[in-house]
Length: 171
Image 1 (tube, helix red, strand yellow):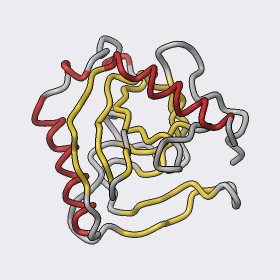
Image 2 (cartoon, helix red, strand yellow):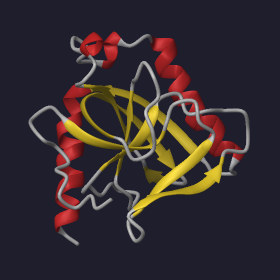
Image 3 (cartoon, one colour):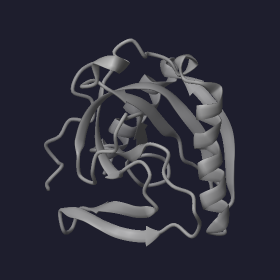
Image 4 (cartoon, helix red, strand yellow):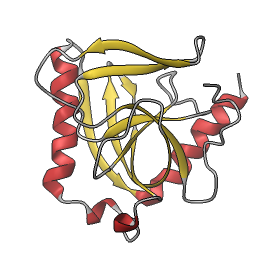
């Protein structure tokens, strides 16, 4: 699975997202570029499970040295390696072991039931808190210090995405 030809943003307001971990999983998979496939990185220590399909935007580089993280709200989990065209609706701002580790929250373009969702304000606050709590819990169980700075709405997505795309050009 060679991701070099996949555009991070196929058109304005959209991203391509590669799923690493399906919703409901305790298995943490990561894309292994050297092998060109998904690899099992670890199994989460506790009973916490990923609340949404979780992955990354290919051909981006975030401040933490990895591709830009992204989550997608799905009615049913997909699978590791699935490519989803998605609309980012906000960002979870967090710091993991002192480094900024923002995560996009997206909805899939292919789901007509989510066509009208354009903002995190349309997502129930308790659902957003569940996501933040998932990261607090699983990171702390691994002995990592994580600070959740909160959610920001869709208008900050473009700047974060552009910064992460430009960072790959510096390599």
